[in-house]
Image (cartoon, rainbow, N blue to C red; front, top):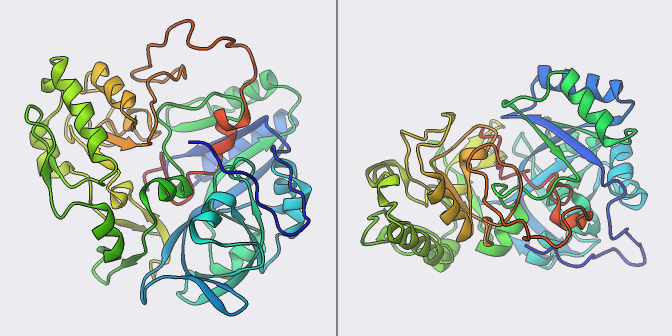
Length: 422
């Protein structure tokens, strides 16, 4: 999905490409563990690289205002989920630009251009976030910056700003300014970071066919909702969004692969087409319809609480009705896939779905809509690698543009947690 043009505050000029493109991110499933953090830092030191520990989560935003006038307000008791990344200004200067770093303070934050466009926000507007204690905290949008620079996060905060809202969840170790790619790769291996339980994302790697959309991209594609976590832990979504984007109930998706599900209106045609092609290729038997109808489906709003009052946490992708689970037992979360046939996986990729079998915590039952074909990407997946023709790219050795690499989405997982599975 292409990123929008750069938006900046007044006469400020933010670079149109990241300061550093050779960046490495190291993380594990869930919050960053002490073991992963310490080994990643050791690897950075060994490689003579600069490094920083990032923090990330989803924050609830209740209000955007401009000189006292409301730009966007969530319904009473609700909030809009906002993917949020916290980085030290020194790291921001190196990874994004000095201009971005110098505007971050305890009260001033950066918003990505895509998420700003979704609500009509501009630099100088104020946003109200809900802190871990439940108290509202007001920040000023100091700049609106291209998503390709921010790495896909919606909100970028300094550590001092994060302290004000109680966001203290470590998410990854970021490394840059190493002598060369071979040196950092050796250091990562020497410190036992090349592991199926740890994800290493290199900024120069091509986009992963099973990477999922960041928060802003998902909202842009599927609409933005406000959510509320109820006393019993259930999640309520504002009725305006559900009425506009979801059918009234579960529907039969294919006469041959008889999954009955309630999926987002935009996603249902792609899902129907994928199931029809699966059936046409004699692969209906690879999908467990019983599992899908008993415990799969699409729409299932739920929340992983990281703060007592539920203001900080993560919403499942199923809250957007953008994902469907099929073989819930044979390809259970955490089980080594696939119980599904790789031909079925590639058909779903062709119709715009990423597959969970290559998530850091394998989730082979899970297909998630991304709105673009993913069957032609040559990324060497661990499971069900795409079969791509040799002439798929005219010059495979040519450097890729930033938006076609892992660098452009380095922080996009904040708030949607594509692979962490809290």
